[in-house]
Length: 368
Ligand code: PHE
Image (cartoon, rainbow, N blue to C red; front, side, top):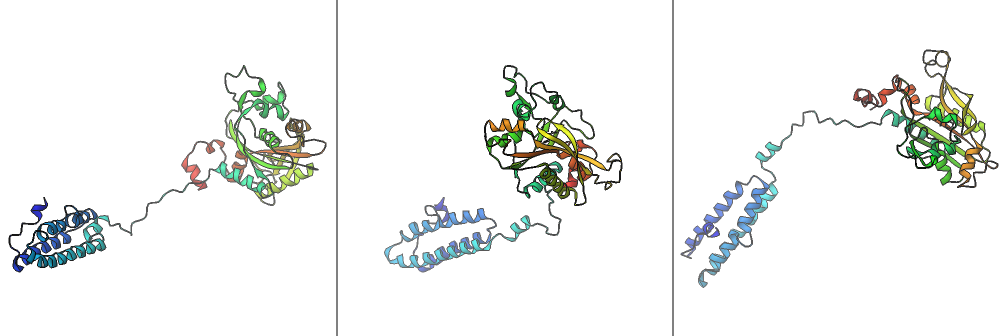
């Protein structure tokens, strides 16, 4: 192939040499001028400068080495200038960058609007969970999580719902099938509340404890505008020496003001939970009417928001099996649990709880 690229030299006089070298110079110049792409430049370099089969190598081995001794100097000088020319052409082509034709093909119209990419947004429930936990984080609470598939022991038994206790009926849930051979306390179910993480926390860590636990829970519940069989809670637990009901009230009153605004009021009604004694339901003054009475608060001026109470000594007794420091004679604590959906519905004016779960972008986009 290269033998075609350069002819054989039959004469080595100055004229013959000038013509032969001029032909190569012209050829190289034309090829370099026609380069339009990086691929073309690579091919040009290989063709002229390639070590084994490049034209310069060919000229060197056939014209220079093949020259009679008296013509060597004349061939050598011309070879040197040819080589310099090829190098210059290569450098120029490398420095020139893409040609106009290539630029035109790649051109973009910078006056066109850009591609708009949707930025994601936190789901309103995630956002609410984060807002609630950060209110408590600011009070020095840590944030924890626990398993959604829980044992009967953690969900019920250690929370002081003994087997057969009627309070279990209020928290009916899905259970994992085919566990009849296991002891009741080891059987798995979808947790009905985040309270089992109270025990998981205490078993890992001696007092003092201040923790909030957001998470998903499940109940046998007919879905309607305000109920869902899957929903979210934020659990709170505070255990230390001399924790009183006043601490509970002060903490929750502060948290509600942080969440709903400083004019919101709280009040506490006696209630029952197996794992707190005394237990209370906390209400806040209606954030829609300011307490005057409206449809949202059923004219009462108050809205029920969460369950709470002082940790029952029976719960501490379970914790003390692994962490003896949970001695109800020495420490005390309070706990609370609130539903995130209810709070999100109030904060964002959502009237149908189902909107949180269907993934309709027209709904979710409003929180972006
Ligand atoms: N676990 C209770 C519920 O799901 C709420 C609660 C938590 C009550 C902590 C008191 C203390 O309803």
